[in-house]
Image (tube, rainbow, N blue to C red; front, side, top):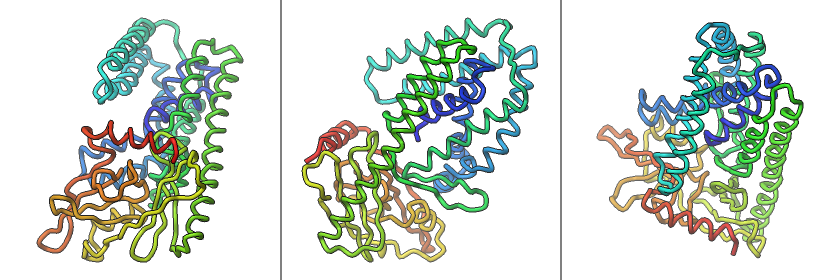
Length: 397
C-alpha cells in the first residue's frame, strides 16, 4: 500500500498495543515503524534499477525482518526514553516524520492552492510539536523494554501483511524464498481503506491516554478499514465470476487468469487471461450495464526478445511480473516489456505510455539485455487526460 496508509496503520496498531501507557507517543513510533519496511526504496541510490526492483518488498517485508527489527528497535527506544535527552530525540523524530510526509506533497504536481494549504498545515503542526518537545518536561515513558518490542513488531509486521492484498506482491518468506504473496483484491492506494484510519487517529489523539474512549475510537477505525478490506475480497470474487462467465460464453480456452483493481478504487477492474501466444483482457466496472467483460486480444511477442535462457534482466522482469508480460516495439524502435498484471490506465493496449508498469530494454552486442528505463504511472504531461478517461470508465458503460 502507499506510504500514508502504512503510516496510519502502523500508528493505529501501536495505539492498540501501547497507547494506554504512552499516549500519543504511540502515534509517532507506530508511524515510524510502519514506514521502516519501505525504506528499502533507498536501495536505488546504491544499486542499479533492476536490483532495486527485485529488492523492494523483499527482506524488509518479511516475517524474519519484523522479528529482528523489533528485537533491536524496542530496546533502543526504551533506552532513549531513559536518557536525559529524550525530548530532543522525540522532537527530531516528530519533525522528520512530518517532513517526510509533507515534502513529497509540496513537490508533487497538485495545484498551487493545495500546496499552499498543505504548507500552512505542515507549518502549524511542526510549530505545535516544537512547543511541546523543546524542553525536558515530564514526557518520560512508562513502557518496558518488552512493551516497546511488541509495539515495533506489530507495527512492522502488519505492513507486509497489508501489502499482500495488492497486486505488487510481497516476499514474506525472505531470505528462504523469493515467492511474492499477492491476493490482488485492493489497489496499492485506496482512500476508502485509509481515510477511516486517519479520521479515527485524529479523534483518538484528542483524548487522554487514560480515557477508555481512545481504544474504542481506534478499534472503530480498524474495524471499518478491515470491513472494507473484506468487501474488496468479496467484490473480487464477483468480478472473477463475471470474467469466467465471459470467457466461457466466448468459448475462450486459457491457461490461467487474474483480476486486479485499478488505481484509487475497487470499482473498475482489469481482467486478464493468458493463452499460449497472447492475452485476452478487458476492463469491467461494477456500474457496467452488462455483466460481461468487453475483451481485446494482445500478442505476447515474447519472440521479440530472443533472449539467452539465463539472461538476468529478462529473468528478473519475468519473475517480477509472474510471467504476465508482453513485449512491444516503441515508436522509436526500441523494445518495451509491459507488466500485464497492472494493465493500462485507459484500457488501450496500443499506446506504449498507457501501461502502468513498463520497462525499456536493449540488446547488447554479446546477446544479453540491459534495462534502459523503468516507468510507473502515466507521463506527467498526460496524467490529467488519462485520469479523466479512467474516471469516465469507472462510471460504467
